[in-house]
Amino acid sequence: MEYKIIDNFLSELEFNQLKSHVLPPSVHKVGNFLTWLYVDKQIKPQNPKEDEPNHCKEVTDIELLNPLHDWYFSNELWFGGFQSPDLRYFGALLDKIKPLAFWRIQANFTVQQEKLGRSLFHIDYDEPNKRTSLTTSIFYMNTTNGPTILEDGTEIECIANRLVTYPYNTYHAGVLCTDQPYRIVINLNYFKEYDI
Image (cartoon, rainbow, N blue to C red; front, top):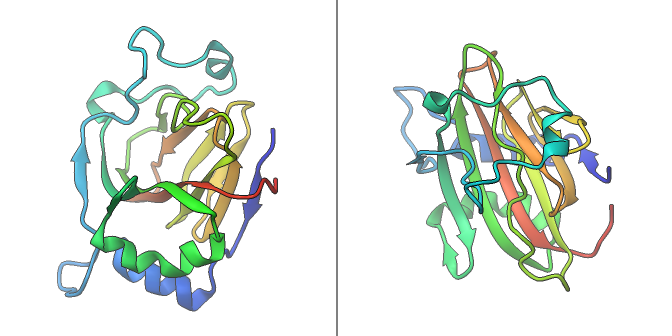
C-alpha cells in the first residue's frame, strides 16, 4: 500500500493558529471559528446495493457505526467554483501542500462514541478523470484513538498535526474516537506531481 505520513507538518505557531479557528471554542471564548453543518450520513454509497468492497470488510475487526451514530458535522471549504470564507484560516496548510490545483477541501467533525465504530470503506470520488494524478491527504487536527484504516488494513493513528497522503483511489475508512470529545480532520483532494 502506498502512503506517506508527515508528522509535525505545520510549525507549532502555524498549527496553533489553525487550531484557534478550527477546534471548538470554550463557552466564554469570542473570535472567528469554523462554521459546522450537520450531515446525516458518513458515507453515501454511489450504488445503494454495494456498501463497500468485500476485500475491505476482512481487514479490520472494528464494526460499522450504528446507524443512529452515522452522522457528522462538516464544512465544505472548497469544491469546484465554491470557496468558503473559512478557507482563509488554512493558508499555511495549503501553501505547504503546494498542489497544482484543488478538487475539494472539507473539514469533518465527529463526536465521541461509547465504542470504536467506523465509516464504510470508500474512495472520495469515482475516477473523476483517469488522466489525472488526484491525491488524497488527511490532516489531523487533534490526537484521538480513532485511526484511518486503509484498504490493506494499515491503521494510520490520528495524531494532531499529522498529514497522511495516498492515491485518491485507495479505499479508506474513518474511525470515530472514544477517548476525546471529538475528532476533527481536514480531508483534501488535489492534483499534484506523483511523489509517494
